[in-house]
Length: 137
Image 1 (cartoon, one colour):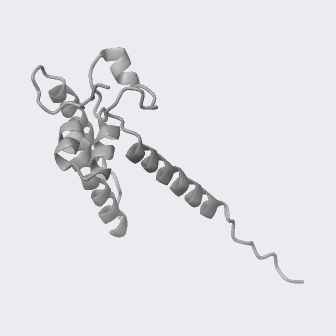
Image 2 (cartoon, rainbow, N blue to C red; image 1 turned 45 degrees about the vertical axis):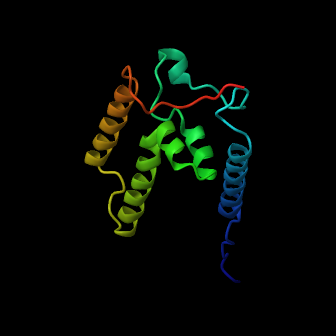
């Protein structure tokens, strides 16, 4: 009798393909529709609804739209924190994984939390120039 040999599961492949398809569809929608205009179909920010403040990610959809259209200056105005911070964080995680080290040690988590809280306060100060844009019409 032969021992039972486990067959590889296709579930991770389906999850990867499904996630990729959803991501591509979301990017296509953000690139084709304009989140700067009223009527863009996206859920409202719960943090902004509760506090009236822009959250650290407010303007992220607009920033993504601007990047897809090559408008770096508008992307900076919409959310420079995400524009710079996400690639830095992704690089940090990839480097740490390749080195087989803890991806997010406590000190890194503290830095991220302090940066997010600081950005939230600074971007909501009166007169701060980098605010998410919304076009009329």
